[in-house]
Image 1 (cartoon, rainbow, N blue to C red):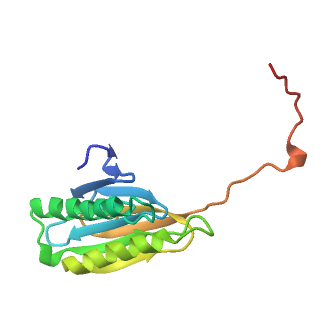
Image 2 (cartoon, rainbow, N blue to C red):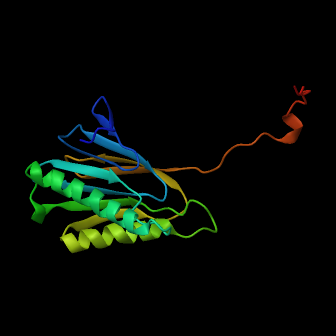
Image 3 (spheres, one colour):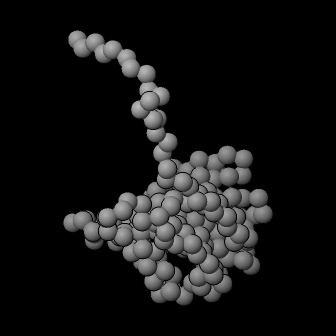
Length: 174
């Protein structure tokens, strides 16, 4: 497990740039994704798995560094599982995230998804499920011991007060 995780009652929460590995029937790893991607990888025979949460691709001048960071995030997760006895030949994956969070900007989310899916294919890890793209953030829960995953879309709407309900208040400037 990485040092930035929060663990509460069998639940591990990860944020961007983090990953966690766990196992058993009650372990849950959870995160919140926008344009970022999470790869949930597990070994069904060993009953262990893990999740990462990474922004893999960047259009800025630091694109090479971001690409390297994505490769590193995938390697840390896969190598961590192998160190715990996972069999590379039986690893399975589910991929989540990659939303287009801001209209009119580049679709980095789909490029992030393409990166991780290509990486899994190159490594010979079978992708058995995904929920990628769209325009909504996702809350993802992953049971690393069984490979079960659950997601919930997060609404982007922000309630605003209507002007007629706002009380006028005097402002005093100093």
